[in-house]
Length: 120
Image (cartoon, rainbow, N blue to C red; front, top):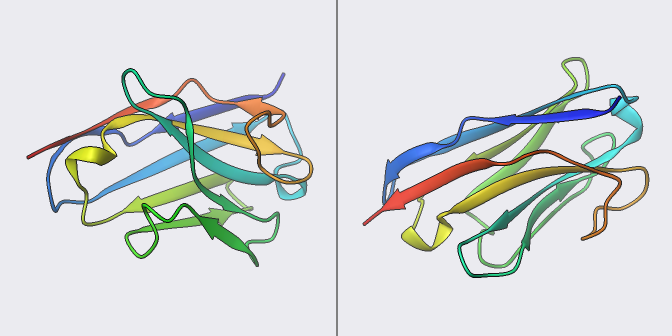
């Protein structure tokens, strides 16, 4: 059974940093592209960042480019999202996703989410 478990969310002041982690099990992690999405209250889920199976390629939403960094450790079956210079508009539930091909809104597997709240 595939599981993606996010952690690292919390409450932080604007300008602060958080690092999210997503631990994967039940799949051959190194064979999957990984990504992060977020959903704010009353809004649709939106793409945040994605990383290829070997970490050689990354992609970011314009809204987080230059502030967030996605990375992965295939030895630990974990993907990370380093979030710096956080803004109140980054407040959302952050979801981890895994896909055998490219990350998209209907990716193969999803985590349950972790709440990130940025206070002004």
